[in-house]
Image 1 (cartoon, helix red, strand yellow):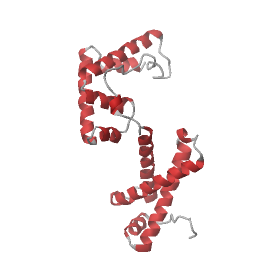
Image 2 (cartoon, helix red, strand yellow; image 1 turned 45 degrees about the vertical axis):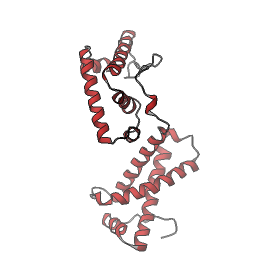
Image 3 (tube, rainbow, N blue to C red; image 1 turned 90 degrees about the vertical axis):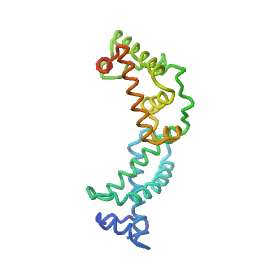
Image 4 (cartoon, rainbow, N blue to C red; image 1 turned 180 degrees about the horizontal axis):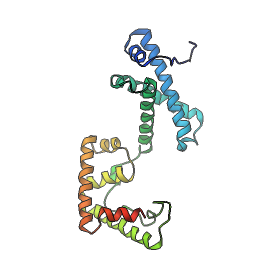
Length: 225
C-alpha cells in the first residue's frame, strides 16, 4: 500500500479487531479510518453545503481535517455500539457527517445569547412576512390578515402564559433553530431537563391558546391553506 493510500478492504470484523489491537496494527487502522472519514466530511462540506461555497477549497479542506480528527475519536469511542447492520466504513461516515452538521450548527450560533431573548418585544416583528411562503399557493389578503392576527395572538400568549425560561427555550430551539446542547449549556442544564422544560411550555401554551379560542386544528388548517 503506497503512502497516503487508505486500506478499505477490511471486513467489519477486521476493522473492529484492528482498532482493538495494539501497536502498528491499531495505528494503521486508526490512520485509515481518519482518512476515510475525512473524505466523507470533505465531500459533505464541498458538495452538500451550499452555504460554504463562498469559501476557498483549501479552507474547506482545513475544516475537514479538524473535523476528521474529532470524528475518528468519536467512532473509536463508539465502536462497541456497532451492530454490523451496514459496512463499518458506512457507519463511520454517518457518525462523521452528523458530527460535521452539529459542529457547523454550533459555529453558526457561537454568538447566540439567551440574555438577548426576553418577552419584552414582539415575537413576530411587524415587518416580517410570516404569512407567506407556507405552501405553494400564496394566501389571499383575507387569509394573510387572519394569519397575521393569529401570529400576534400567539406572541401575546407566549408572553402571558410562559415563564421567562420557557419563553427563552421555545424562542431559541423551536423558532430560531439553536441546537439543544447550546441552549442547555447556556441554561446550565442538560438535554433531558430541557426537553421537560419545552414539553411543559408547549402544554401551557396550547392550553392558553385554546382558552382564547385558538384550537390546534384551526391553526393547522389556517396555515395549511
